[in-house]
Image (tube, rainbow, N blue to C red):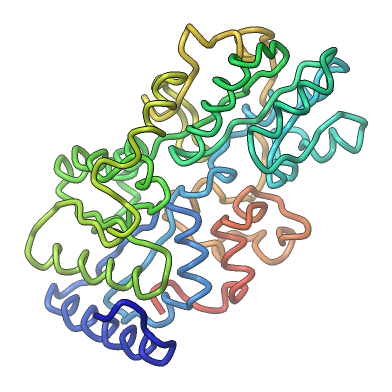
Length: 371
């Protein structure tokens, strides 16, 4: 394929790929089900209408790829508890304000007078800490392997500059361990994974190999253009037909096998793996990151622990099941009614990368999976 296609050529190539995918999938005699575990992939797939293009024999489902969506209630309860202290400033990305805890949200805390500031990078919290030496500035460090290096770099910069009033409330997540949980879940059935492009830029491709080989389920790293995703799907179907299970890379211009060693070194200097909770999946062993003992003075939970009572909410929200790919958003009784982007009940509707938000924005669930 030539380097740059015109839009017309791209459409024609996409149609050819869809036809090949359909013909190859049909040889298996069953429907194939593939899951993306990246919120940006989720949005790209919906925006391009790829689900509607695919044949009946191929189904795409969304997994736990949105960092805001997978953040559990107890983390939000802690963030709200810190926000309500007079000596604290919370620094966070904007999406986090609307994520519900078990009783309220940061938005409600802000309305009640809490000092909560929107930032666009963890590094922005350094300036806030410098400008407010009498306050504890807490950055809400959520995300996957992609964002962990910048959070770690912020800690190292704060250390270098002698800043003592900047802290992290960490909820960093790792993708491979949760893939293993999904594959052990009897309700989750997938024939392969569209592996995350952004995460893989940092980690490289080797991190997926143990899971892919252990469960004999193929995985392909792809970019975010529709044709790139379709090419990744074609390679997944090829592996299934051949009975193979390996990690392939359809995003070679950006993702290197070794990833970004500098970013990984920064992350590993500050963080180490730990057990952590995921919305809808409970605590997943070694699927999170916590600060190493050398950097515990930047960990607000070590410096200033808070006790919160997380209440199990009685709600019809099915975000936990949506994140496992076992129900679609339109199977939630709240979707598109009580729960809409302007009044989100569940986190999957809060984030622009949430599955429910994507369903709502690109069709309000009027189409079916795989169609």
